[in-house]
Amino acid sequence: MNIEQLEYIIKVAEMRSISTASESLHISQSGISMAISSLEKELGIKIFKRSRIGTIPTEEGKEIIQKAYEVMSKLEEMKNQAQLHSDTMEKELRLSSTQGLFLTILPKSLALFKKKYPNVNIVIEEKGGQEVINDVLNNKIDIGLLNIPKNKPKEEELDFQPLLEAKVIVSVSKNSPLASRKSLSPKELLNQNLVVYNGPKMKALIQDFFNQHGEMNILFYTNNTEIIKKTVAEGLGISFSYDIGLDSDPYYLSGELIPIPLVDLKIDTLVFGWVRSKKQHFSKAAKEFIKCLEIYTTTYK
Image (cartoon, rainbow, N blue to C red):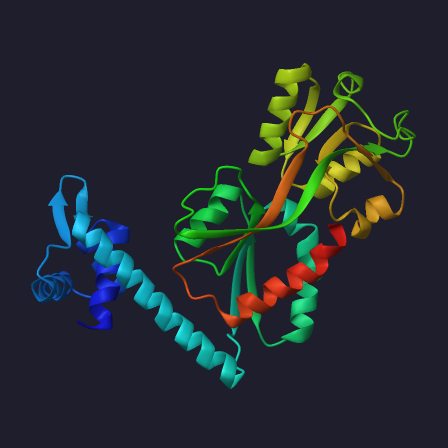
């Protein structure tokens, strides 16, 4: 038995295909098949069976593959421990983030991290929540930042950690008749024009609002938050968002936009946090970035 054999059975189990695993690992199909056959002969069991839906682990094989995951995880821990002792840091940190965190807590956390580790190159993309989860599952990124779903997918593979809870607010112009209000209920907003951020979480919130309380006139949907804030500041409509990052947003700091709590909603909070793969090496750069996130988000708790 060797490490390569464990890597092969893990990849075939993930891909449900020897040919696809071969392409991913840049190893010939025959090489992978021979390595798996050799391992099966050594262990005295069949690890995989072929079916019309692909190469599927047997019941005995599932146990072996889980043990292989554990062995590879321990090997990664050993590498990580050695890296910590040598005080080295990866040269790249890969992130995906949903809009809520991308525009609020992320900039200050990134600035803090770069101040401590200026030589680490950070690659980050703004995506939808499911896309962030897919990036983590496919090992495209080190950490995903997202609105944590209540029903967490693939918890046996993914580690979800909450950072903060955000409440829904209504943003209005400083010149709006609503600007002096301490809170607003849904029925008080039905005659207002609405500008909506074109993301799945916000669209779901708006649809739930409409189902419960009645529809509002939507001016437009957009992924451009600057256009949303400018439209609201000019008094052309209102918008829904969350009460994080307002202390660093020029529109709110200058008083052009007024945030007002929205009450009497069925769902009025979101939990923001991070997700990583339990099967992927948790790098020192990723761990240090999480510390920077936690330093900043404690101010919201």
